[in-house]
Amino acid sequence: MADKQIPADWAELLADFHRRQTAGRAMGSPEKLAARKESGRLNVREIIDELLDQDSFFELGTLVGGVSYHGETPLPSDGIVGGLGRIDGRPVVVACEDFTIKGGSIGHSGNARRVRYARLAAQEKIPYILLLDGAGARATNALERHPYAPNDMIEIARLNAIAPTIAGVIGSSAGHGAISGLLMDFVLMTRQSTLFAAGPPLVAAATGEKVTKEELGPAEMHTSVSGNAHNLVENDQDLCAQIRRILSYLPANSGEAAPISASDENDDLGPRRLDDILRVIPRNTQTPYDVRKVIHAVCDHDSFFEIQPNYGRSMVTGLARLGGKPLLVVANQPNVLAGTITAEGANKAAHLIDMADRFNLPALFLADNPGVMSGTQAERAGTLRSAAAMFRAQTRFRHPKLHVTLRKAFGFGSSLMAMNPFDGQTLSIGLPGVMLGGMPTRGGDQAARMDEETARKMQALEANASWSVADNMAFDEIIDPRDLRNALLTGLNSARKPQL
Image (cartoon, rainbow, N blue to C red):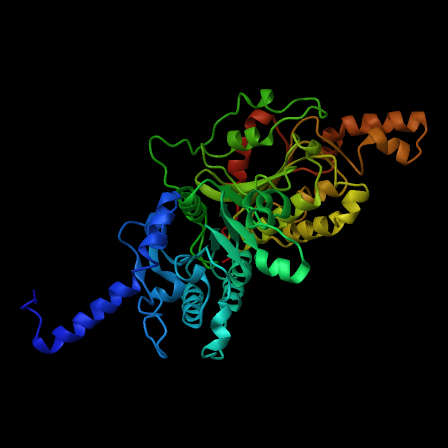
């Protein structure tokens, strides 16, 4: 029935507009959408609704793909849906590839949308979230018009210096889409997703290797072996929850301070003595323990969000809050290789230190390591180059640095973990009994060909290092471990404001 409130000269035009708008929002065929639902996955519009605040999505480019120039079938939204929205009340740009349209491949119109979204995020200095579920550039693009245009990889690379970027892989992502995702600050993958430079048919044609998608680039491999992705998530809903949580620690852009949690009567953001920490950190430096327990004790309750937990496991990294203030945590993990710093651990730490520096977060370093990994495999892995990259990142870090040596830090391992109080640290703390030196005496005495008497003196010096280093201000203070949270709160609250 015609709406009598609409003037006659508008009625036909609006009817055509609404028909085109409905077609643009249609997504793929009913069969494809039904198959997606049966597999337990959300469609492109459902996942955007899950990610954003309720009723906050404003689509940009709905009618893209809706015009037929040479009789070809119109493609709803040309395989990508995106626009403006809000997360926790703060504006973001979001885009999601639609696998139900041409396998989520990138056509010319879809490319224009992608460029616009990334450029808009940079222009307005707001976070950009890209959800990947596509085959890369569309093979038939060469048969169609081929305008000279930028691509979104250029825009994302430029955006990195301006606002936070997060990629979520929700299906199979290849080629252009996969590379775009790896340019972003964080990459999350659902358990069933895959990521690769080229899919199985191209791999077979180029190399002769016969491989399935699941063998080529599974999520578990990328989050534990290659390090291409940061976190493995269970499903689309979990992905959205983790994206929202990551953004809760970060400012909208590099020119703002990170959001501070407001205290309420149920929060425990203030000082407290850590009476149980003496049972968490063993006195014997050879005894392993889980440094996550120290992080949870020191930081605000339930505030630690680990980043890349399955890669470079001798280093624990993540985002947390201390007194309501977001900060980056970088910690050696004595439960894995005694906390030795590997190439993988240094690489993930360097990436996150750079990210924290761009977005004005303080950093907390918890050191407990015997140094940098050595041996033939370590040399082949380029461990020293990775360690140098981590050292460069933390030395260039412009914001407050808090350092704690929990039990030991040897050689370059102490420098990587920001022990030097004369390198811009706001606070550098040691616990009683910390052991320091160029290398652990056990084994180092043989490497240096020490005689028995010299080795004995070196062992005694190592065992009493906390007193000698306190004497020459290698630490600002040696403290009772139970006072650790309170000391760090004092340091953080005394720190300069972020250099925006």
